[in-house]
Length: 115
Length: 112
Image (cartoon, rainbow over all chains, first blue to last red; front, side, top):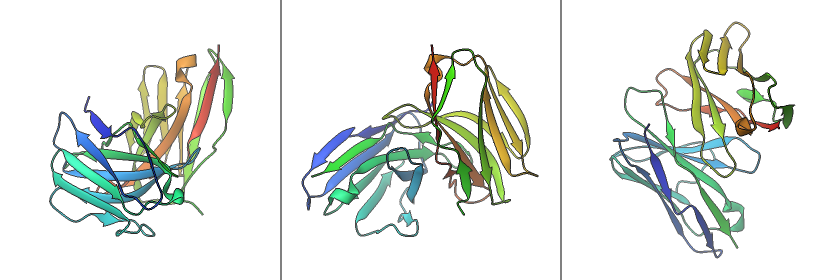
């Protein structure tokens, strides 16, 4: 099956710094990538949808200036959490899909802890 | 009211039991219905997918969709300790760019 990787798997950063998370589709071209946030024992909340070469579409309530998303190629999307604060600590998961298919392939997630 | 409601559990069953997991939803426009399995600290993996109403079977897993009742189910037969995970239902409308709406997830524990 299709494989999606995320890097790093875990990151701890100090409050006020920025953190970049990478999402890669390893064996297919992802025309669309999705970024989710998941709190403990909670559902996945969609943060934004990005299409290769276009600006990301953010869900209501998600600050686009705080969560910068770039989808520069068909195999790579990045999420940058700018000026991170402890309330940004969470599990961030990306997924990728190809045009015309319903299926999203999920990455293993990145656990962000802001101290 | 949330678009998709799912009992978070936790649900604990003995090995070999039949497990029934359920979700209800409010938006009649949903056409694609999925079940994902998520192990602790991992990303979700797709288990079953159903388009519109009906049943689908894959090994020990059966997915059912009742659009008239806005109710979907996942049945696991002969449950195994390795089935212990969180099960998330997810739904999607047509022409929404693949946007999935997830339920809260049900935490399942299968005891040997």
